[in-house]
Image 1 (cartoon, one colour):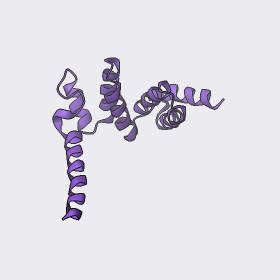
Image 2: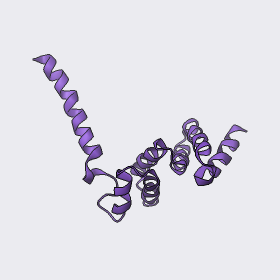
Image 3: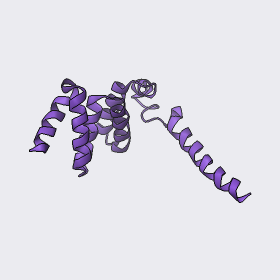
Length: 125
């Protein structure tokens, strides 16, 4: 009985987290003025995730912006990688920021990558 309980608790926690992550109402920006962009991001459009993250960052919602930039970067969006790197740089995590700048630079030098390439070059000096 004790073993079943130990197994059941982590499964409940995982199920609860999955619900929060994938629930339509809990997705950042889904119920606000950015709902159309948030919906496209939720469906997998990483460019829209970067756009939504930028809006939320401008509005001071750094936590959700950071999460969305990570989602965009994971989908190989150069601007998402660059922007997440910039947040991490401001937070003092230069190693992670440089890694993201390098990724952004290698993905697309025109889309956030130019700044990232310059940052990477600057960081390597």
